[in-house]
Length: 410
Image (tube, one colour):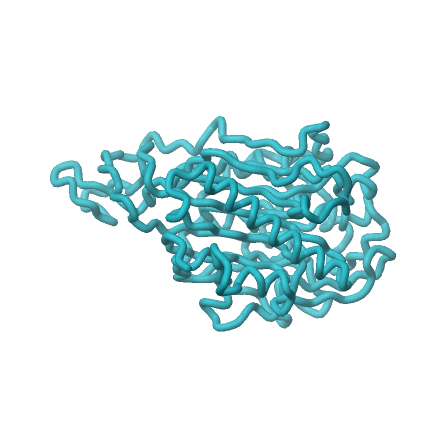
């Protein structure tokens, strides 16, 4: 465990991390100390899927068998969207041109900020965690979240800008973490990998993206009486409700995450629209090939789209004439998109100036229902220096939502 000042900073960030409304309590952390060395490159492989080799010890939990869930039963899942801000793009010791001054240099450095990021994510206790700009997957996020019962699939960007900033020591990518007791990974697709060039053929570019197919396990809150077989959410015998290895083979879920082109000009706007179209086409193609009942499979899409709500890429995703049609969890719950999901003030040569906008989203296919979204910090809480700040260790805010799954509708 971290000691001295690092421990104080990590603990303070964890205490200050915003809790989603009506969220479940976070699982106790048993993570090991994080390495201060960079993640080793994955060589020519641009993606990797991993599962926990040492899931959370639940041997003391009393188990009861669950009957097969009926076809069409709707599960509820907690999802998180978070751009973690790659170290190679932010640590002044590694990249003097990054220009982030909202935190002291020692708080921007690894492993200190890595510990804060892990604590921030783990506090949500979400079933699905979609991350972008992850350049410490193997040495930070994977070992810590594995110990909390998560598996993962990861796609490294072969054209990552982190390579140049870190002397080829780091590369960022996108990943999907999922709880073993809620979801079973059945397969995943990495659209158009490897890319022949960073800005090549637009018809073969879905951004930095990843598509994963899951079977849904029963919620840990479901329990069956050992004497009557009736389902219940509590027990008079003091046992802890839990899930079992039972998987509902009839209920599937597709999870998509993406990080789209970041250029803030007309070229970038056009590129993001094409990337969104290519990504959804690839996701649908994968769903139709892999899922047992594609038309009934809901889709959850979380990402940093680098596109504001009025941009063509976002409007296209919500368009009524396309299928599957998506809705934004925050817009559906609050009536509008958040005022900001990223806010940064940079003074260096790399993208200097202030950027404050909404570009991160949690989407779900129509037919699903959003029952809750997480509270987001406002400008007053963040402070005049913008992000990252104490309590928010990235230049993006963490979004979260509770979604009741349902078959897609037109």
